[in-house]
Image 1 (cartoon, rainbow, N blue to C red):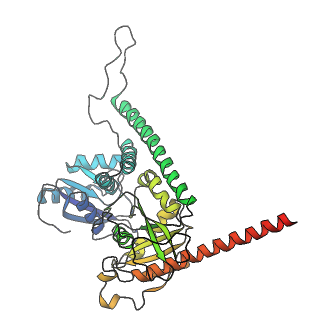
Image 2 (image 1 turned 120 degrees about the vertical axis):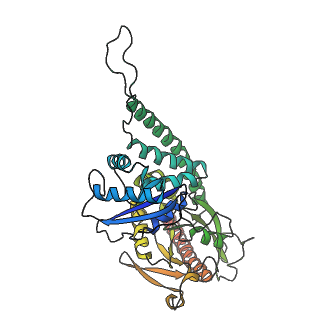
Image 3 (image 1 turned 90 degrees about the vertical axis):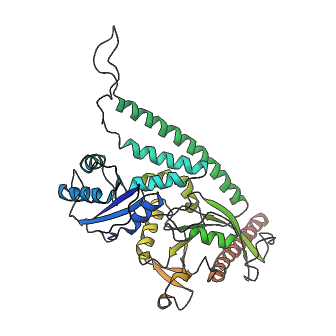
Length: 409
């Protein structure tokens, strides 16, 4: 348990170890999430349990300990690293006499703050409404409409909670309909890229792995990038020119035509980052954005090489990719932040292979910030894309010969 300076938005962080292998004993990621949402962690409490307490999640004794610490440190909010049921949240707020929120709501709040595009705001709103629909509880005594009027049967009218549920259900329906229109627009854009014979590459990875910084370095773009969780939520797509011999890999303008033997342009998309215990509702809501990864020809899986927990982060990204149906897309593992590694942890070679889900997967070490390794990454991409282009050309030539043979017969 640690304490820091008091603030008006001070929060106590609480984590419960149920024996899971990925338990964050220092609550570092929850602390980063809290800071990203505008809160200041002032204290941290962890405990071990075999199973959650049905009423208070941590049990009555630990709840009293949390309450005492919050009083001592002047904390205005309690944040749990695990998801709470509506009843547990309600009971804890009553005992702790403070707002209680969990990891799910914290991530939703961050997404609401960071969404910039119309599509992103719609997706966050849908996830928020779906989460809110499970949290409706009757807390006040006045939550009933007037009884039936004169000449009508008596009895209580429709409860306010039922009105709220219907209003939220209607709002969810309207938001989904608006998202369907956005999805159609994205499908139109993808069809246009397919007609241009575009090769699609998507950047995926754990949040704060440096995806946007790498994206900017590759395509000379100015997408928002910062050393924080979920710095950007909206998908950005740009053209990346890959030279055949990499001699012109850093040329950012006036590339040759796409069908030129000298090189080829591909579509590169930067997508939203993943995180452990990402709310399922957010995955569903961001389906239109994540579709960029599903429809990609190649995934650049960006990994924070300086993070000691990178194996767990890789596993979490793989889990989400499987959930959205992108597990079968070829990958290149890009171990970023090479400049942040200690000298004794730096790799002896920039390019090798890494076992991923039982398969040997190409891996490259880079520093998006310093540029180290980017030439090697471009060479890998160029070799893969141009090889596939030659295979496609050979297939078209073979089909043309077959068609001519049929016509001759």
